[in-house]
Length: 148
Image (cartoon, rainbow, N blue to C red):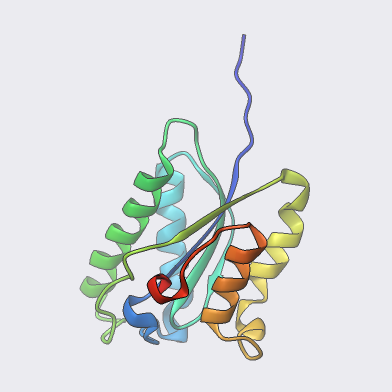
């Protein structure tokens, strides 16, 4: 008998101290690099986008991959790559934590559109407010003093 699963993760992580260290001119290169990591781990990338200080990823997670390892690999590999390319001169590192939320497959298009419109969205709302709103929406009780 075959096993079946469908797990959509909305992953969010930011730069160290939420500094604007990801130049817009190089966002696409970074997203393509992350897509390669996701494919290598047998995942499916549905959408990636972000701003100068954070990234949103909507992807499927292969059942043989632990979520913490997945996020760690993306952050570690991109950290090294970004420093090697010279295209991210102000980037020092990613922040220590991250956020990973699960969604039903029927919500996929809603989340894709949300991620797609990140740059426009952040003309209105700060990252910190967005992040706290996501945590509240999912009933995650987090002390804001320790989130950032």
